[in-house]
Length: 128
Image (cartoon, rainbow, N blue to C red; front, top):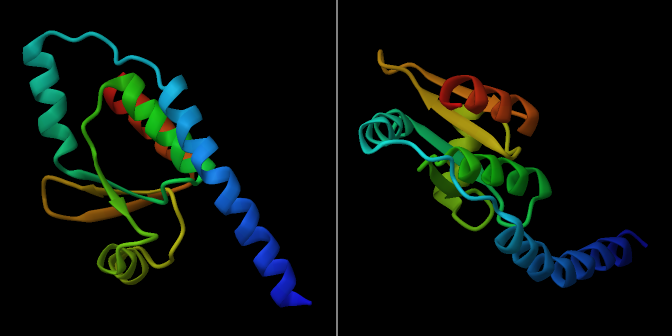
């Protein structure tokens, strides 16, 4: 019985994934306007950030839309299909849960921020 339930949900994900990704493309907002100097500062700050994500995860989509709205060029790491990123998330972050924002401080210390609402609040506070 468990096998049939798993297969059913895999089928549902397989069917819904293209629609979710298309909806993301169509509804992603335009970035806020910044002058080139400000955008360069923001881009430099984004070099210390990386988003671990799954492509069709609704919470990851929510975070990616906020990143687009704020005009952030944060590296996106696929923890679903890239085993290297998945292992790094599990070993360094403590669990394979997405979305997860990896924040490296100026001192080299790394912080792992889980939960889409917390990630969005952090990005809003730092870059809005």
